[in-house]
Length: 535
Image (cartoon, rainbow, N blue to C red; front, top):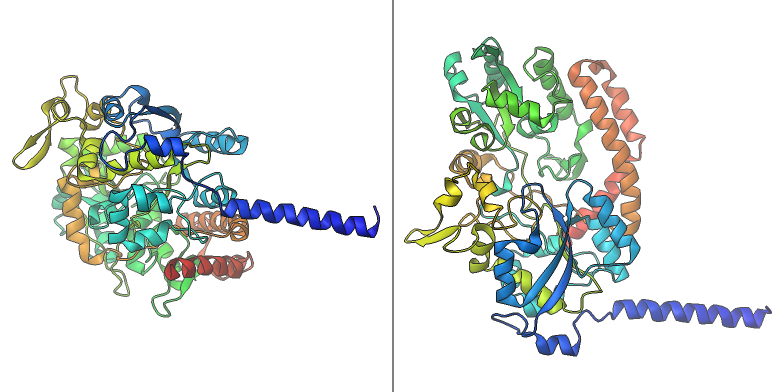
């Protein structure tokens, strides 16, 4: 090939690439003319002639077994003329199956409750695999649109750097503090009364309470002063007393320096060392369950059902331990630390998980698909989604909808969640809806949880950071840097707390972290935070 031919070949390749790029930018995301003629822009049915939508769905263990035959969805199919052909994939193993499907090119029409990571949403969105939802929401999803207009911070969070929305999230109600709290602090009132102490309000008082509780027993079993299902959940209660993790728990390594208001990597802060020294005191004196770094959930629940825990940071104790034992627990106080810090850090952004409803380029009816989910953002739709079918699972009263006795006092001994799972798909799973306290049966809306949230409201983080969105190059580097940093931090945290490594090695620990690409890691995170704030 001579120089002229090589030049012409180069021009041809560049032209093809530019045309391909432009075609991706101008991608048609709407349905065909035939699909639009079949669509009703409002009201029911959504389509005049029935259609079928193939769905890849994540399935939690607590939901109905077969979504292709659930009373709720059967009723909704009759209302809409839309049949959802569900392919359910258990949450365990979901990521692997989802990645295989995305890589295969043999796509469903819709990914539902599939926990698609932000990085994949953006990457596959730019490739045209996931279509932008902006215009579809604007034209065909009035309930979702109204919500996003009311809470523009939600819109900012779900909008990617290219300006597109590629997924509908599952949202926590930003007006319900109990929903925005992850786990919550609890004190065993019977053990507290036996010690003769008041509900601890400082880290020092908490230490003294745990020491006193350790000397007691419950039904012949030694009291376990402080525990949960992981060490992380203990930090959720303690870290705010040291001014740490002050932007919530979705970013376990970074927060805002209270003095400079700049982003900081808090595992090397002096306050973090103080917290580890405090936790080391608790652990080495036997005040933290000694197998906390390896404890299984079943073991924790078994101990809890025996009433052995004096204090824990966990979810509703009645829901997990039963009425008799769980009813012994009262809300624990947000603790004040040695420097006057008093904050509860286990707070979530309303968008704590985004990738739950993404329409693919294979979908021939995107308008009907977005209308299908939008109904469940209306009051009537939320009531149906969370409570089921009127006359079967709930009935209307002067005080609003109330679950029927077949659900609340099931003749087969099923719990409320188990009984509801025979009618609806909600209990468990990443459904792209918003939990509404008027209708939701989630444990965080039980009276005990609401009391806990209201009691500690003055000390809850007001503006927790959401998960950030990264450019492709940033994501690639961040995965390497964050994996290495988190692994080292977690290993050394455990060694400092258990006493395996003495705190005389602290400076060496900090120097090691600073040499692991910390500056680059913080630069990437800061750029992502700036984009979020500038949206």
